[in-house]
Length: 86
Image (cartoon, rainbow, N blue to C red; front, side, top):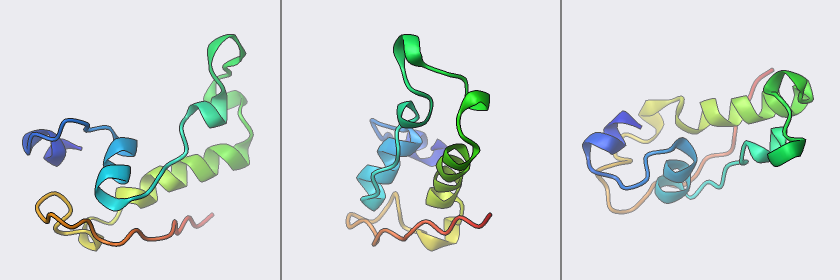
């Protein structure tokens, strides 16, 4: 996200970068905790959903060596499947 900011990307959020650079559509936080008057805290959400959400975030950009040219190559690399290990 810092690299995206320094390189002038318009959207520097993790989910926006995952979609724009890797073609991965990530789960919105609202799918896990809801929104509006029905929103719950993360600690109240089902542990399985929270774990999957957190692993997906970590796996998307967790291995920087997987996508070395992510912000410099005009063609985004192929998306990889989540490899969450619990």
